[in-house]
Length: 350
Image (cartoon, rainbow, N blue to C red; front, side, top):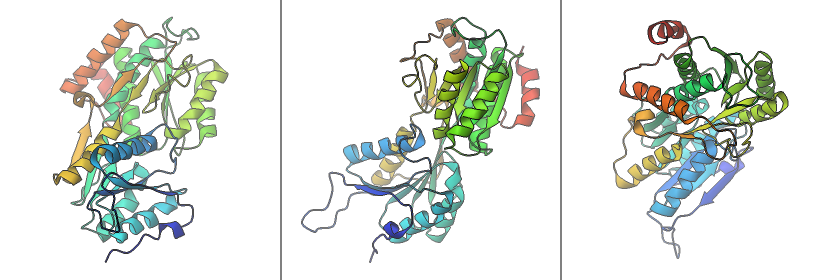
């Protein structure tokens, strides 16, 4: 007998349910797929991974007849209890984790409930009952780094200074966050080996004030365009850009429409497609625990220039795509750590 969820008794939980077209009627049990998603502490409304997760769930509800439960933890310390409670309920065909900060809690629950299927988005785990969807952000941000390196000394940005300095701010010092920073630096150096790339780390995904302070510091050091890679905290970069007369480029979030005079482009990764596909695999009986990668070659990402009042020259866009194709084909193999960057630049950049 499956026991009822007691998540509502846990402090700080936000629990929502949505039923699909296969919902039970007249007290009869439904055989529809049931999915639970544990969001990150950034929560819904982050214009990033959490909102993408909800899009996937809504699509699965509409197209597949899936019903779902959302959980929005308020603190990192809540993750363990939520994953264990969801798994122990026996109610769900798939439990989805969003974000690398959930890895330890997810693994613990997966070990305790080996028959329960789990899904890890944006990080990798090797276990028989966990599937993983990993976007190769290092490839995506390589292209953004290339573009920003070119834009920093061009007339396309009215406030750009004559210094070849750009920046990037990420959320945490963990591989899923640091590898994309390395890719961004490599893309920038591939466009101009003399460009200086400033880096800063917020420490979490939600501290907009800290992100704003770090961005203002980078602008003061000569950067006129900064790549956002810090989740919900990245909204602080827009404030900093407005205060400092600088520019921001988005990742995962379409910042163009939010600040069209400050954002020339955004790198969008529709991770909702990966999440939807994993849910569908459960329903189809084709689900496996292997990692599914999404990089440039997969066509998963989109460089988005619409909705911005800043026009990136087409020849620069074409150059960036050509460089990105070299990464996709394997002609250019990106390093994964900061220690490898100098050697990579020596071997690949003029």
